[in-house]
Image (tube, rainbow over all chains, first blue to last red; front, side, top):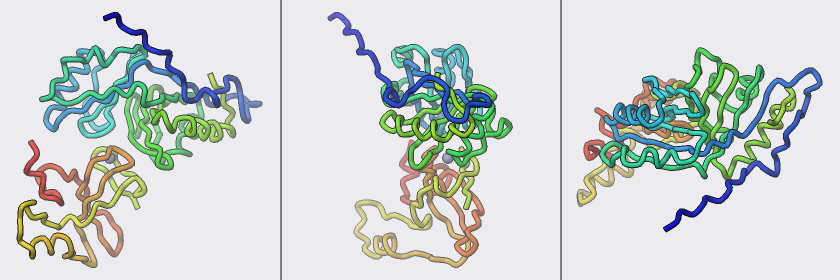
Length: 200
Length: 97
Ligand SMILES: [Zn+2]
């Protein structure tokens, strides 16, 4: 049977996604907002005691070496991975098909894989005021020593659950439920007005 | 009030859900010991002081935690994963692989 081509994925942000400079940008744009649209967003979970085996599988399949410890993460070459809960990891790839690449390697004895590529929306905030804007949303410490490069955090904003990875010194990737993404995006744009923002 | 999740670190109490008294002992499901069921459902220590409780970090990593909280001062004295060496509130810990 011939494989059916996948339908073009549409952005849930589209009606509210307005490229260009907005807000108080006369003195410069202090944050850049964008939707990164990764092709693959996976949730991997290990049974208790199988965490190290799962981390090794992630390394073999993606080439990403997860650091030990709660919330540890890494991003490189269009791929990213981070811990968001005990024994649980989010793994992201620019390209589609990452779930198939894991097929067969995560056996039922090790854990589970859930493909959330169509269930999450990835939003990036970057720039000198990224920490400032993020701190208005989430009651966690965004300073670099407390939230190191590559690390992940699970938290929420007004009951909208969010996973956040620091993908640069002044850059964060936020994963939110697709059904809440447009509302979150609008709030993020409003919160960025005071510092001047550009949508790319 | 801050609760320090063993995975996520200190977080505002708004991220957590109270799951009840951590001192209850749930009878085996087939038990017909009415006194034991009555105690499980109704008896609470209700101390003015340190109290063992089960909380879930529902707005974060979603882990279930055993928290010791002082009911007078709201000071959090300790937090740990509910799974593990300690009996969970529902007695099911020993059934896990
Ligand atoms: Zn937590």
